[in-house]
Amino acid sequence: MESLYLLIPVSILLVFVIAGLFWWSVRSGQFDDLEGPAHRILMDRERGLPPEKSSKNDASRMPD
Image (tube, rainbow, N blue to C red; front, side, top):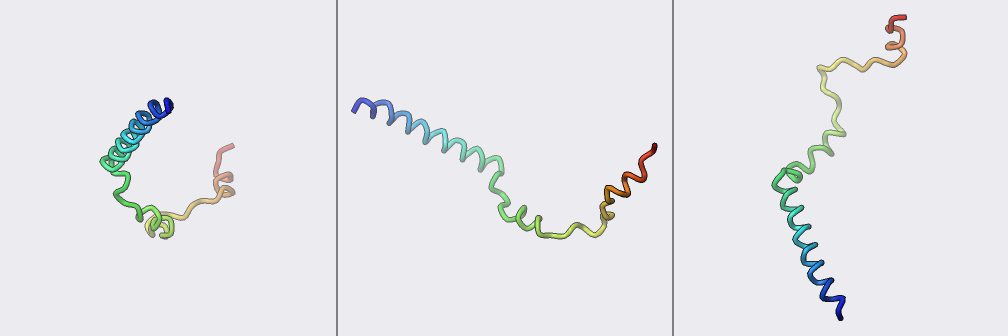
């Protein structure tokens, strides 16, 4: 029974800490765009960018 005197205030404090962290994350914009990053992975690169160079070509251009 004496352990409840410790566990109840600790659990109430934990609830306030979790609620505060959740409030901070909502206010800082963590949940603004949940679908954008998932769709961005599937999209092709933009057309204006040059193709990536292979490591073989890069090695041949390096000065000796």
